[in-house]
Length: 115
Image (tube, rainbow, N blue to C red; front, top):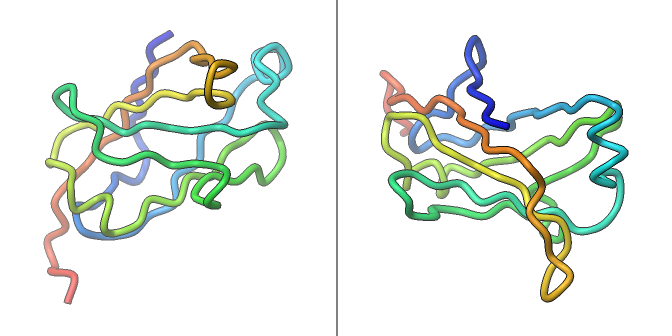
């Protein structure tokens, strides 16, 4: 499954943002997304730039089959102004497994400097 997000607020290079990703009930239940550790790796051009993790609070589950991902300014500063790709992993170590799907979120340069 490849998902390209459009008509969403883009990640702005050098600024923090919280993005929200929701799933259908059947997928959420099948992948057991409501519990356990979730990690999300953000990459461009095949290089992982930053990883969000439920353990550090950068990923939260606000309810209604959604994740809120808090991208800090330090992470967005590593991104180029083109879509960033991310995917989800459930668990860690030998029990870790990739959750199906690859997601693409827009990244832009902010016109006004972050000063």
